[in-house]
Amino acid sequence: MNYISINRFKSTPLYAQLKESIVAAIKQGILNPGDKLPTEEELCDYFGISRPVIRQAYAELINDGVVTRVKGRGTFIREKEVKSHFFHELSTFDDEMHRVGMTPETLVLKKGKKNYDKKIYEALNLTKDDEVYHLRLLHKGDGLPMCLVDTYLPLSFYPGIAEEDFEGMPLYTMLETKFNRYIALARRSVDAMIVKDEDAVLLHIAKGSAVHYVQTISTDQDDQVLELSFAIYPGDRNAFDIMIYKIDQ
Image 1 (cartoon, one colour):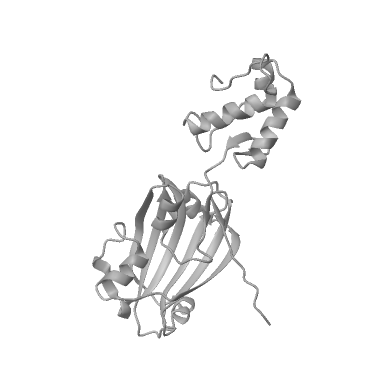
Image 2: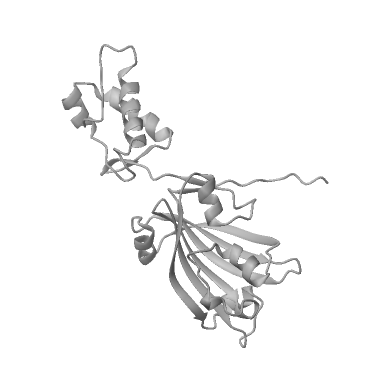
């Protein structure tokens, strides 16, 4: 607890000193996402301050989204939350990370032809004779898993795509520059769900956690479907900025 500084002779209220000490420790890298904070009892004994002081400091940190309280376990530093604009702006994951000052990284977990799946083929407007390419990508920001995506592509639109470097170039950029396929419209829907155990391991979240589940169908100017994807976003690391316009009657 040496990162906490409490001075009874300062005019700053004790709860504010406690809060400021924790915020400063996070900025300096002394405290990191997932770290547990001292309990009320520990702080009371160590600094000789009252529980109401600690509760007020922790309550403000919770309201500010800095920490989270887990029943029966304690109070923890929250993961950094990224507010995505992708419900009103078509951008790559790399662009989103750069916008919030984080370093993007993409890992290919799976790639190859997809066996016939009625739901996927119908969404892509394909027949059983067509071929579909499947990508499973794990996107990270500053080394922290932010998004797990399964993408399905009509193989006839992207000959030779299996030879491309999916970790070195954002997918949308690749589709445009390498295959001259330009997405004009993306239709997205979002649901809440409980993450599968195997996906929780990949995303470094607790099993049974709530996640955002986003489906995207992308089309070109002729309404041809160029891409279908299903993405999983940890609920405590991602928020979505949605714009709604009033339509004149």
